[in-house]
Length: 467
Image 1 (tube, rainbow, N blue to C red):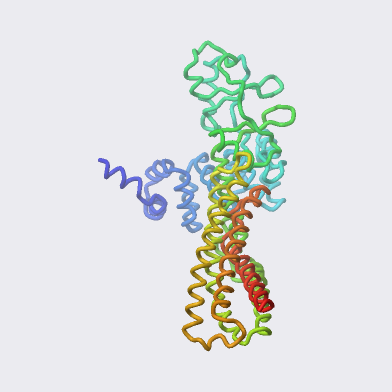
Image 2: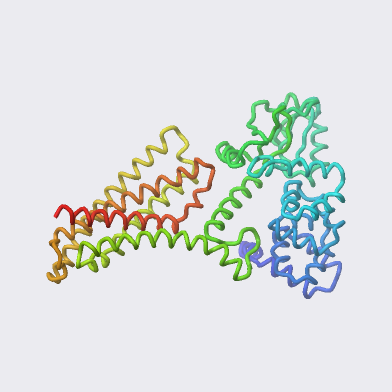
C-alpha cells in the first residue's frame, strides 16, 4: 500500500495530462479527469503543448480551473497565452482569478491591451484591480490581495460560518476573518480555530483578538515579508493611513516575493533573461551578457596592467607572475568562505539583535586572519623551496627568503582584505533592501583578483625600495 502511494505521488502528471490531450477521445473522460488535476500540473502541461493542443485543453477545463492555471503562469507567458482565447473570455478569466494575480498579468501588457481587457471586467472587480495597480512597485499594496472576508463586530459566529461557506471558493485567506467597523477600520481578527471553539450564538466582538500585527499598504514589501517570517504569520492585514483595511498579504504572496526577488536579481546580475523569456535570440543574449563581461574585463585588465610595473624593477618578473595564480586562488578561497557565511546569516535573519552584525564581522575577521596567517606560512615554505630548487632562478637583487616573504605577505594580506570585504558587502546590500544574492561569487572573485594584484604589486615594489 505504501509503495503504491509513493508511486502515484512521483508520477509525471504534466506528461500524463499532455498524453490525455493527445490521445483520449472520450469527452466525458477528459472533462472529468482534467479538472481534477492541480493547476500547477496543468500549467506545466500547458507549457509543453502546441496551439491546437492548448485550445483542446481550454475546451475541457472549467473557467475557475483555467483561471487558476493562468494565475500559476509567469506574467509574460500568461499574457501571451491569453491570445489563444477571445478578449471577452480572457477578461472573464482575469475577473475570476485573485486580483493580485490579475493585476500582475495586466501590468505586463501594452497599455492599450490592458485597457481593452479592463473595459470588459465587471465594475466592482475593475475598481479593485485599479486600486491594486495604483501602488508603487515593491510596496505591500503592489503584492497584497484584496480578496478577504471582513465582518462587523456584532456578527454572530453562526453568520460568520455562513460567510466562510459562501466565500470559500473565492478567498485565499479563508482561515482568518477581519473584523471592521462601519468605516472599514480594522478592529481585530478571528482565526478559524477561535471560531470553532466559540458558541454559535456569540458575537465576533467577544471572540476576536484585538492585538495583532499589521502593515501599511505603502510599506516596503521586504520588510513585511520579514515580519511574517519573524512572527510566524500566515496572513498579514494591510491598512491605509485611515486604519481601513485594504488587503491582506498571504504566505503564498510572501513566498512569491522572496522567489521572484532572488531570481530577478540573480538573472540581472548574470545577464540572463528575466521572467519566462528563457529562449531568446543570440543578439538579445549578447546584449544582456556583454555589459557584465566588460565590467569583469575592466577589473582584470586594470589588474593585469599593474604587473607591467614589476617589469621595470625586476629582470626575473616571470617568477612573480608564476606565483600570481597561487596568490589569487588562496584569496578567492577565503573570499568564497566569507561571502557564503554572510549570505547565509543574512538569509537566516540571525543578525537582527543590536550589535550582532559587528560581532559577526569581528568574529569572521578573526577567523579569516588566523587562516590567512596559516596560508601565508605555507606559502613562505613553498616559495622558498621553489626558489631554492634552481638557485639561478632569482637573477635580481632579491634573495630566496626575501622572495618567499613577498609571496607569503601577499597571500596573507590579500586574502584578509578581500574576505573582509566579502563579509561586509552582503550586510551593506541587505541594509539597502537588496538581496545579497545580487553580489554573487563571480563579481566578488573579480574584485578579489583586483585587490590581490594591487596588494601583490605594492608589496613587491615596497620590498624592492627597502632592499
